[in-house]
Image (tube, rainbow over all chains, first blue to last red; front, side, top):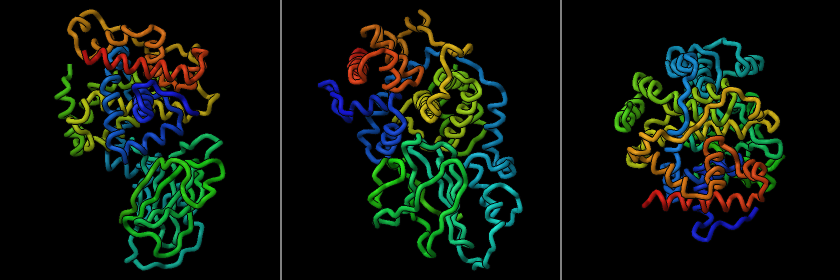
Length: 234
Length: 181
């Protein structure tokens, strides 16, 4: 929809104000988050509005959350507790993956899928690669780990997907080469993607874009990129 | 009362992996940040879930906090609002809690006279908003506190979305010019 911004506010300034106020819908929100990453002027405009608006929060009557909230936070940031915790959330699942790749026999969903399939030996020199795909505000959308036994990427999505009219699509971006689609992602369950040997190495970027239902029709991302993560050696 | 400087110092320490500093920030700000997420999400357990996410985000991103770019409280409130609005927008439409049914909505209220007279940032903002058309100021407040989208606000106000956006943006500009005086 095209609407006229006031004469003294151009489209970018209007978007910055809308975003800081929090009035955008989910698709616009994701696009604005991406813009924050790559457009310093836009980011500065958003931050200026946040500085103006956020003191409004002082008018909220303080409400004490239940004590369990801090207990859950403390458990999540404690490295020892975290390693033992069930793979709830992606932060945890990345640690879970590390543990699994060593020798864990834990029967979580991802692991179960892997253990059922036959494995072939692989050189121990093959590095384990992982990436955490985050949105601009730091929210983890997907954690990804490369399974060198099966030449597959294991994806653990956060469970927050777009509406039914849109499909999240995964992309592999290697340097300046054009992004390559790794297919659509179901954000509600762990899954794997087969990938040819040698395509993944440290520094390769995995990205998620929000496409119209069914995915991009051009072979390149058409919708906003909502999360990116760089593969690095675990 | 935790000063902005103390809060900013704690954030720096959290950025260095100091868990005790995160607890200090939690003790000082969780009631305010919970009010932010609760006002937007209404549902108490969901608002607590999001509050947990907020502090995990603070833990991970504190190293990116830059006191030269943003005040500590502004930065924290931004994270809380973004996470809560994200959650609100990700809900299936029919799952949105009917506001009439919510017995325990954190309320907002005008600042006490004492704070207004002290004339801080919050007082200036309240004064600036009071200069706007009351309806426009009300819409800006609803967008901020309830996390409502333009679409939802236009429905509620029964005006075309273009009109509503125009009111809000003009209101924000007017508010900003009042703040600058």
